Amino acid sequence: MRVLSRFLAAATDVSHFPAPDLPEIAFLGRSNVGKSSLLNSLVGTKIARTSSTPGRTRGINFFEIRFAGQPRPEMIFSDLPGYGYAKLSREISQEWPKFIEPYLRERPTLVLCLALVDVNVPPQESDRQLLTFLQASQRKFVVVATKSDRLSNNQLRNALRVLSQEYPAALLLPYSATSGTGRAELWKEIRAAAVQGPASRATGQRFPVSANSD
Ligand code: GTP
Ligand code: MG
Image 1 (cartoon, protein in one colour):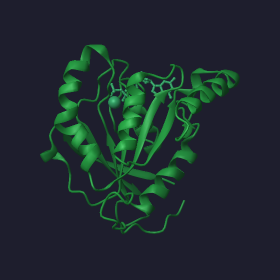
Image 2 (cartoon, helix red, strand yellow):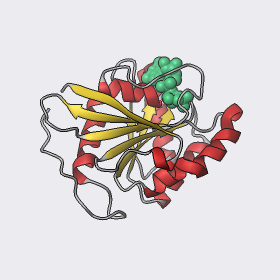
Image 3 (cartoon, helix red, strand yellow):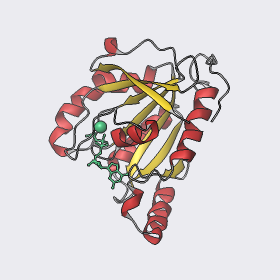
Image 4 (cartoon, helix red, strand yellow):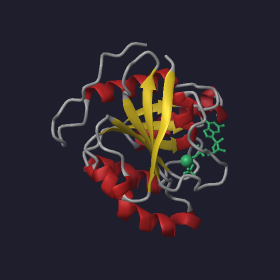
């Protein structure tokens, strides 16, 4: 499956959001966890900017996703700024109430949140807070355990066990943007969510998404 992506908008305010007419997938997690790298890995191009310096992504960046051979775009990916990085936390704490929280709470087309956690790092309070917030907002989410390539099979198994104990209600998928491990599984979840549309919290409308072909 070849994916064609196009940058749509960078938003630092609710008024910058693109029109909500395609199912949207949000990439969320602490600074440096690998949100932009995951997006690039799924799409197969370096469309989102990545960096080893935390805080690379400052606004919400929206990307239109189209599958090769399909006449219309299928969905939107939204790459969000990270949280939990000490140096930035003041700014982030000012930005979240301004446009990120409203986005997560109110965006009618948001069908799935990818909540990224670094599988090399023990569960963090800020991640718990995000997942609690998503649950309270009745958002559908998947926990993506990033940078799985940095662990041996044994270490990875143990780390995933710890995470699944921490987040028992969540679907947990290991991922490596470096090797592509987990890519097919995650695409399956994304496409299923896009077809299903938003949870009943929203209008209940279905999206005009065509049947998927791989
Ligand atoms: P912010 O935008 O600053 O919040 O960061 P981000 O979550 O978008 O992280 P980004 O994708 O920029 O990646 C941060 C660093 O982690 C970069 O140095 C990436 O190369 C590295 N990285 C991301 N994913 C992986 C992975 O799967 N494996 C390995 N080994 N490194 C990764
Ligand atoms: Mg980023």
